[in-house]
Image 1 (tube, rainbow, N blue to C red):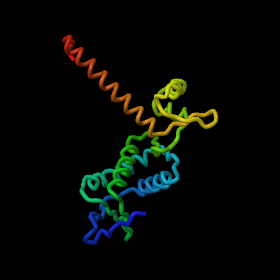
Image 2 (image 1 turned 120 degrees about the vertical axis):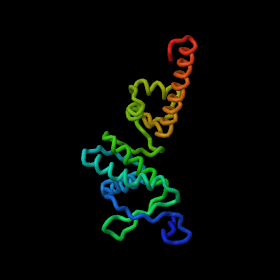
Image 3 (image 1 turned 120 degrees about the horizontal axis):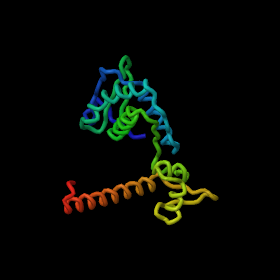
Image 4 (image 1 turned 180 degrees about the vertical axis):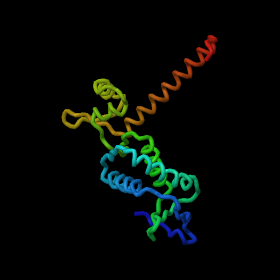
Length: 187
């Protein structure tokens, strides 16, 4: 575990903050659960309810101003408690993003980049059919490995493919827009 300087020490670059708004315990529990799942390299999936959306919005509104401040660490003091929670800037960024996703109301999954996915899970993430994904894997377009008869795809490789496809689509759209403008089609 990283040695975190005291928020009161002169070398501590953090900012001592006492939150005066209600920060949802659900949000911190979700983060703690997320941390333990990442450590064991498994996927953490949760569905949001209307209550958790409201809690996530409150927590997000309380944490956003802190996320914009400078410093290596953020120190949070829970209301009615002497307990201090110290979060690195990177950890706070993750917590804020999880809360943003929760406020959207859909089911959310946090998957480590090194996680191996089945071909069906990978197809679901790309929003394509499994047979189409298998063709991409067989052609070597997306790296994969076989475990018995089953294919496994690293999340990191899947996201790299998705990003390259999005970039290629953007280039094609820019070309189409330029062509439409050249032809005077009003774009």
